[in-house]
Image (cartoon, rainbow, N blue to C red; front, side, top):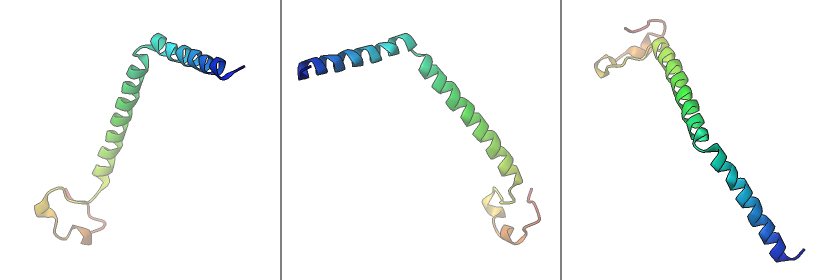
Length: 75
């Protein structure tokens, strides 16, 4: 087996491997879109719950003295 045979074998392997992508088409892209969208919805739901538990004010005008009252939840 010389180097020419090796490179032809390597080229045939790449052509066969990339041929799989033609069979898959856009299904993998659609799968990634669904997984990322689901993860974003999950993350935003958890963030909404954590924001509800925090006692840090949202408005800048309410920003004075909020750190002194640990047990009091601001509304």
